[in-house]
Length: 535
Image 1: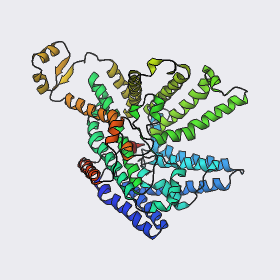
Image 2: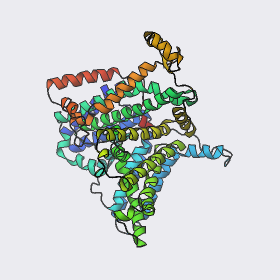
Image 3: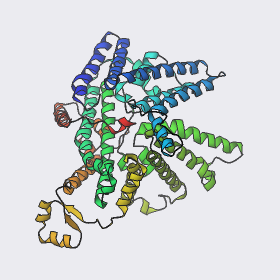
Image 4: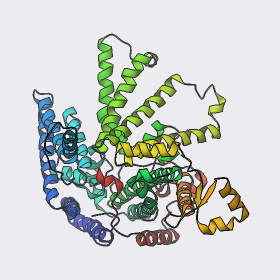
């Protein structure tokens, strides 16, 4: 079931939230049980057989977690963790990577047949698997305090995050279901949640989906793209991804808020980032946290221990040496981001996506360590420098996103080639009405190869430019949704607009949200899944 569907909006959402508070009025246990059943129903709606897989995964991981806690500090604990992680990763490999691996071996003649058939990818398998792996690792570390079965099932299956995140940590969610206040309806939380939900629905239906009509054709057949078409497809996709994923995050956080559950922030105006480190602290923030906690930090710690065993220094000054920098920063970074790229998909293009970001992050860390300091260079403190940093960061992200979206590495390279080699296609195609309105100037521009008359088969370039510019204005000038509803830690720039558009529990705000909801609901059209559902 999709958040952006009439069935969810007018049937499932009111029944699940209203039923939760009605059941909670009887008892907290009944309220928790209602949310578990509602969440399982939400997942079953998509493909009932995979609900069995989800339940098996939950039962297996909960049992392993309890066994890890029982054997804390005793022999065999690490073996239990190894078996549990192997089983989780094996299931993930089978559903997500086995067919791609078999097809690759067959294509290179290593095998004579495909040893596995293409299988349907269970919705959200990456998210509920990684959520539970984090729980197992914390059980191994002895940091898990909440051990109730129902609370654990609810932590994993709670429907706002089940399919595409945010990636939750048990310590921030399970305790909330132990609080009495969670089970009493709070009008302020409902208002905040509804506002976030409809902002997200607006982003998805009226911005992300329409913009996809400019990006999808180009990525479907990159060989037909010219210079402007390649740039148009790439720019449109970055905006589609931005509004699609931020819209989903808003809706997920908003639904949880209606149930008095506070999810961590997951999206904080990442295209305003002034460097790639800042970008990853704003984009899919719970994934960044997960990668740091369970991949980068353990790898960096292992490297540090190895250096310490050899008698080498671990100081910041020592890390500034090229060899130490490579082992202490670059190696953990490429390990982490390479795995992050593969997590997103089985194709080589996803690995390239991850390695590109690993390169960006490594260069950014090197710049901070070896480059000039803003404290001693005044030119690095001005607005022009900041704008240049934002632009450079965005272009780096755009380059990686081309691999993220392309059907293959070859397609991504083709698009990049078209973007940097005009090949004589520098004339901007204009629709007839605009070309005619230019009069003699249009003829002069055409004669000098600057513009061309667009044929009937070409989409309106002007319409696409206007749509992209409008989207960029929202990205860079409008306050983000977390700022609007007053979530702590949100990016408040620009302060003027952020002050004008803020949640108020009054009639005027109710009318404004009602109009927003009406517009967002009218944007619900044909079935359109969120981009992160495929991961």
